[in-house]
Length: 392
Image (cartoon, rainbow, N blue to C red; front, side, top):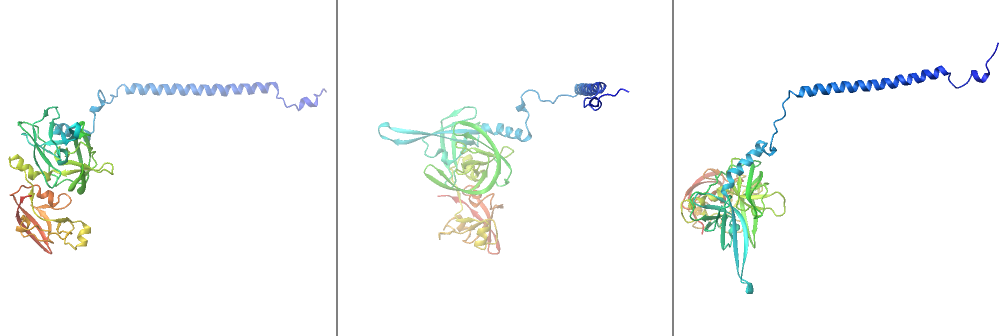
């Protein structure tokens, strides 16, 4: 019997047929993977084809042409407000002569601001500081029409308001005035103005951030205390002064007047009702005078009410902390029997408070008009009639 050598029986090398089986198995696995991949691609292609066929019957979104024409309701509203009011917003250009300056003669300084047309025959409201010391005033309408026959009709001695008059016109576009005593914090507003003195009818939007705000406003070397202002975050830039602050109906509810120099996004506007008394006289062709009550007062807040133990938390406390007369002798208030220590709560049934202080509510009326003032005197509520006089 022949026997194989020991080394051949226990060799580590596989027999030849085993190697063939391994190679065959590898080929099977490789071809299987390739086949599955091809099958997956075929199925994916079928799915894509079916989706394409399905989409043939699906209409495309209706976005054709200028995408700027597709706008939200809010954007449409702002655009319509600007279109409605812009013709009534004017640019005001001024020249201020500084007098003789020696060899070079008289120097002229140019200024710019904004105004609002409030009558067809040419009355315009703007800020007093826009036209202060101006030797020449020019009005430019939104369509480019220029008027140089412009006069200063009058100013409010207690507020940053001035009234201009274009002579010889009778058909100017007039802005619609709203009610600034009913505005709400958070409501949407739009401002239009001659931004930076060179970008006419610039439109910005924002909200009413607060009401009844007092500020110290500076124009040149003069500082003026303004009260009862509307605070807004609508951008108000230099040159916007005198332009309108508008509600969502395109009505003028304020006259833009100042920006906070040390903060971003804080602007202020004079409530439009503070101009109504003088405006009435302008439209009647009378001399422009400010209505006068004759009291010194403190606007009431929670702290003041607690300090002086007042019976209410809003209103105006007839009192002067500088030991001056709180009620001016011989004034309309004095004649009506108003006394130091009284609290004014209503003027012609409008609440005195953040939406309207005594000064701006009185400014709704003209000298000679009679109004009713509601008072708290201790625990007693009184109503007195007051005939307003002219501010001297």
